[in-house]
Image: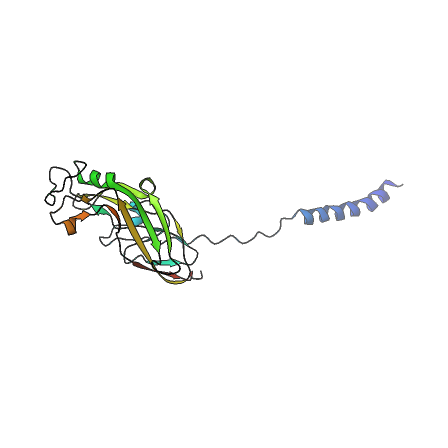
Length: 212
């Protein structure tokens, strides 16, 4: 076959094949990027302390009055008010007859703390209880603005209950009575041995997650 006629016949076919390959190789349109998660609002104590930073918690914290709403299907962490004691054995004062098991009051508390029980919707058919041992939940080594040491309970994550109002109650269990070394009134300065209600029934509301 004449070379010119051969090329004239072949080149168009090669061009069509090349264009077809280019179309096939063209990348598909990229899927839209997922929306980044909304930042969790931090929880602040009554003295302005950022509890998320203090306890190194990235999830929503429930506890103080300003921190009692949860989004539907959201994971959250429960904190209880910290237990504060006198700075040390040298300045501690106690009710008459009380003898601590450890010289420093904060060590006395930590040594007697056994567990905490978290109760959702106490006294209702929907009641749920979970108990965690000291090593799972007790945080210590903190100091308040006056230099008093304190320990605090921070729960593992919980799943949000159903939409609507709920209550959440924290019980402590101690091996024996503990007094904080800050005063001599048993009712104000001491915790009993055994299991007792530490927080009362805290109201918690689960609300729909807002659209973004």
